[in-house]
Length: 443
Image (cartoon, rainbow, N blue to C red; front, side, top):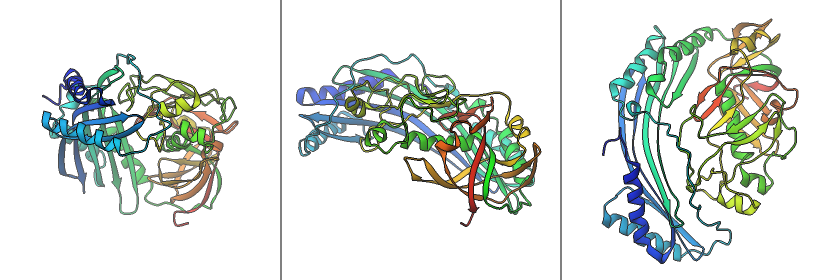
């Protein structure tokens, strides 16, 4: 079976075979996957490693009178699958019953969408090397390092309640850094298609910022206006998603979310949509629930949180298709979109009287999920802006900032229209009225 043309039908056949082995002894959900993950690494401006892994797995979860257990195997012959079934059923019978078991996902169709590209799934080391070369050549005279990765995977899932779903997805990423003797800067690009990665543009952006950062100045801590790059906004949204819009956190009382309240600036709209062609991934979750668009924030008003089957049952609503298969964590919106504004990042900078433009966050850690206060460092290029003009580079700073407050009513001065994919999030640059820098990189 070619990794370039994976067979969802054969994956469903494998799931059906495992369900038949389980028979009437238990309820069950089975997932089967097959694909190739490949990586081309470079350092000291030269490629030093090509690796590829052919991933094949079968995951099984069985439920016997409310008792459940799960296991995974990479062996797919009939004997191995039989062993998987028997040991998983045996393990389930040893566990206490789960009073909150929500049952299996019912039969329901998924959206007819595939975030897939044949050429990316079958990408050769030479194809990835070409993107790396563009990145490295864009920083002539600098030292570069990073990677170019391609992935192609099909996943099929079926359960004993009659749900059968299958899809496939690809992704490609170039992520690299250019260094001078005293500074560095990074850039990345992600797409469903390797052919859409512009290694030269990413390399040029990193090289330009690295050179401009070579003679950085110290800046006193304080509250500054900021223009944050898409990378920074994506970092912020990870915390909002995991500790806020996660229904388990909301039900547990640890989330900042107050449904129906104006918690964000009126310019902020945030939604999750795995079906949008601008994103990557699968149109169903780990529990085989189809995904659909979920509006989390509309014009600044917090409207929804995302659910898996367990939290949905507790809240008396339907799952939104965001289960990760980890009951202890809850649900997670994997394909976030932050509504765009107008203009470019340069346009945002041009309106700033005095402040900072920040291109990357690093080592961010949440201090209080209820207020979304997070501490972290700037990285890979921070520049002072005065009179709408980018001035000298600034040495990295530590910040301690509530991410919700930073995006709160009256705090978002502008949003750009040049959003891009960062991981699985589609995000623009933002101009914020205030950001609390509390010290230098060492404290």
